[in-house]
Picture 1: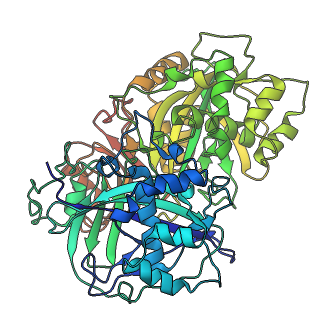
Picture 2: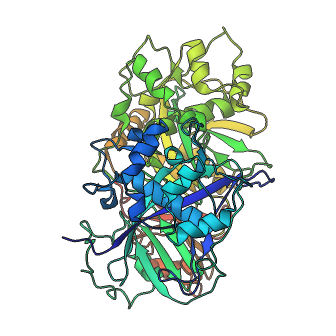
Picture 3: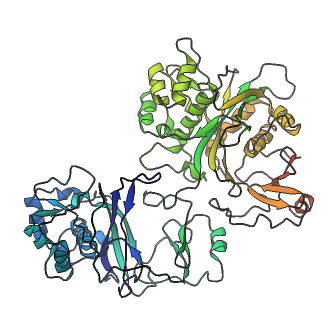
Length: 629
């Protein structure tokens, strides 16, 4: 079947910016098309255009071989999936070369930037590209000649002894115009990085000022629930008006997997994505929260306690803490780059630790935080390392063991030694003077990741929270209570108490438990035996894990915090922004709201310490039922 679109190449040009910019050290080149342009008139674009017959001539092969350019390296691996545009045409130049030449030529034609280097310069030494600039020729004149087909790029390069820097034009993505448009393109996007910002010479027939138009539409991308399993590249076989009776907010609310842009007028474009890219690329949307791990440390208590045979470790944050100051928390913190390095894999494999057993089953639902970042350690492992490291940094407890002493017990152990000063090494790791991996290698210690059991996952609410975290909660059980060495800048105090004692102290205003800690203490309070608790925690690995994003509503006499499974909780929560009306029930009392609900999993709050939790259902992910008031 003949393709119903033209083929093109686009070049994303970025250049290092030497100015003092607190966010980015580079800038991106774009231009505005004229009103008379046949494709995307008036729009802002990267340079690029359709492939030309002179880009595909095989004369380029001899030209590049004479200059010893190893263009064979551009050929993709045999098993790699490639877009349609990379299908070679018999008798013409290989597409992985010709499309790069198209991108270079179009960038020269439209903006006067020559992504070329001198003949004698090796263009493969650096991933950064180069641009050619000289006073020996009038660039706009030659730019115009190539644009008007008076001269080919090949002849231009031969005249001025230049070589197109194809080895530093990197593949980025590939886009195709939707089937319902009259004029369509499949365009491969390349990426070129420059070490300085080049001068530009805009071509006057294609480049002009900006204008605003009005429209409203949803563009869905691979992975989104609305995206078809087998898309039709040739014609429109879906009803584009299928959802025109719904707002974009309503449509988003009924969708679980999101990868789309929502457009309200020309400037009102919002990217929504809660899944990784299907091709392993950079995620479409950066998460508006940080990612962290928390460790619930419980230890067997040999004292005669009629209710619980274990205690739970917590600490009180300092008043100056940027997150939950003065709150009673489990040890934990944000994931660090050293927790994600792949050197950990070799470290554990050398000690024959079956780390792959930590992976959740493919068919089991897991939280967003477990989406592994390409090139980094698997999240099921790196987040356990985060939890162990933070527990050491904050409270001096080393959840590690001697690798020569394996154990089949679900209980972990803590490391103690008189051979070194724990406090000094605790400070070095806290201050990033040494990594946990280097510490473990130095003292022959093994982070006991196989005994760190999954428990729950919490995401800071979207409303009233400028600083947000998605935090995975783990549980580790010890047979003895370890000594504590609190870090002076983050920890006011620490304590070991039973779950019911924490809840009593909270009720009596003697301490404050932030919502996740309060709910998890209520959950722990239903299990009195440490052995039973560890058995439950060990079994969590093969169960679903729901991301708990509390939805908050104001009532006439307080506020309601609803959790997944409650009748007020949406089927598809919005993790990214507060897209619901928090005052929807402000004319009703807490009791009135409770009386009209069948399924309850919520906290009702009158003030900081007056909180009642109502639960009559098993959590959606099959976890322990939370104790109800």
